[in-house]
Image (cartoon, rainbow, N blue to C red; front, side, top):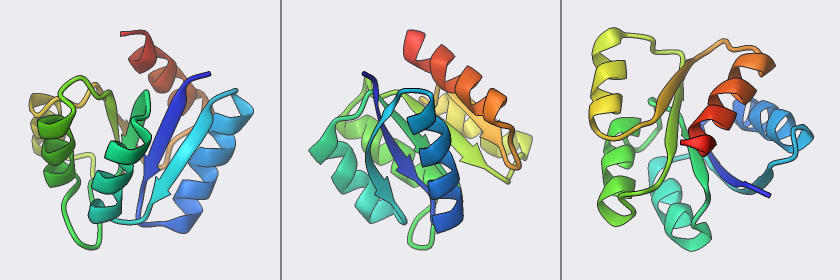
Length: 120
């Protein structure tokens, strides 16, 4: 069973993603409401994939992405954000994100992107 860490400052978004992914057979190893917790949980739980919001209360998702990649270069990270600006998308991909999901999203889109990311 593939293990996933969800990082989003919105409790509602974390719950929605957790329900979608759990229903699809994934194990949620943790939920982080901010960047600091995300960095700690990424080390502690060593998930197969991390879904990462770009806007976090204490940090930017791009900084968290860089931090995780510095410690765990092979970590698979999918950015999930309402910020669909091309500049940020491109930056995230340059820093090592595998893919990008723009909110609001459909369950089909999330599961398709996650499945594809885990197969890479």
